[in-house]
Length: 371
Image 1 (cartoon, helix red, strand yellow):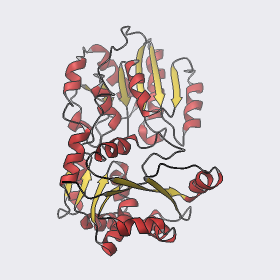
Image 2 (cartoon, one colour; image 1 turned 180 degrees about the horizontal axis):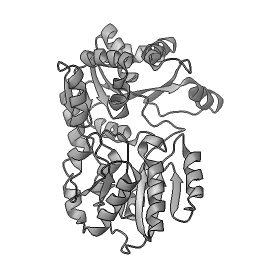
Image 3 (spheres, helix red, strand yellow; image 1 turned 30 degrees about the vertical axis):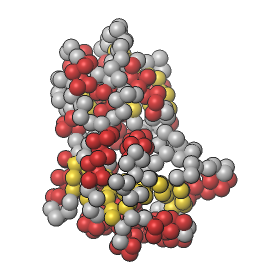
């Protein structure tokens, strides 16, 4: 029996001028399209939308509709859901899409989910909310945002979180909310066990993520410098972009690491697997996470991951078996974790087997069951 169409509403979705954005949502919805017709509604900050859609005339594929999210820079974030709601009404087409929808997935807890919940209250469609990481770990800590988020969560058939830790955090605030941990998947065809570099020198590590302070990237650079001074031959590949890219480059120069740190910038998702095949381990000394998809992809390649015990990481990463749990994002703890990694022997096929249940088909099936 054919399932009713789904409107996927999220600021986290690839657009023509940023095709590498939110690969996890793209992969999930590609699988979802095997079960139901999916259309996409993507709010974009109005300055970005005007620059790309109006001035540069960037076009999207037919199923994707972008619209400008009008907000006042410097105003409190508690107003963002209201401003997104009004933006959708003013732009008309988003309003019409919500009016026609029978099933909606809002994939980001704030402001997207709150905006979608207001439309659900008015229009009566079935709503699932997906939360990924910072939308819970950051926004729910602010009282005004938390009040709106908890109200929105109660309007949804289900609030899907990417770890049990995130579900538990929501339930601490309101145990009546239907919160369900459903782990993201991995493309096992793309991320396969490959021959890792045979030489252990230099030790080659890979960081994939946004270039922002809370990803621990600056402590990681300092740790690489410290280990190099201790005599360890080490190379770090960095894939990602972010607001602090200039700071990263300056730090690499200050520590004289230009020959030891390779900054790739934004990398297409299909090339991440190639980078992984050139490295010995993934390293993510993050301050906070949900369950980082790149960690699961690393394990699918049979490559250990070195990650801080934040969010749902300990639910997937078994210290000493498929990776190393870093005690914290502090420099010495990163160094200690890297030293431990070099002292252990790793079984690539056992590492892959540890997450063989985490596929996109399982993810999508469990989500659609929530309707």
